[in-house]
Image (cartoon, rainbow, N blue to C red):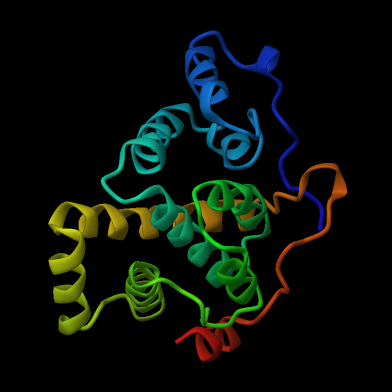
Length: 195
């Protein structure tokens, strides 16, 4: 798989875009790579996406472990190799267990989830694969997490679907030719295995 967009260098960016690049460089483990390489080609949109991603990653009302779990769920559903590669170590540092990540990577419902992880898994999988959640699951999420966290989790899920699409459309590879972390599966197979 060949990346479709050459990597932008900071020096190539117009002067008015560099303040955004500076903000990205403060938080991105990928520097201007990953999704930012594509987003910077549309600077106004990139600023808006960056601000949203900054909130969803660092200021959200959702617990960091659960937030990163939700991102990995989107990566698995979308076969988003780079997204998984970038967020697995962050999820591990946030306290998500290797057992949960390993089963999800293999496209299996993790068997060793904590109860709050089970709730996030069910919510995110239903929302992403069915574009809605059943009433009972919605009510459980609101009761246990609160309305703000459920809204933040919903927006996080949708935003990382967008990030997955951007990474897949532009064919962002693993840095230095690293191994792909996910087995590529057809959407119908992912749906069958995760629901």
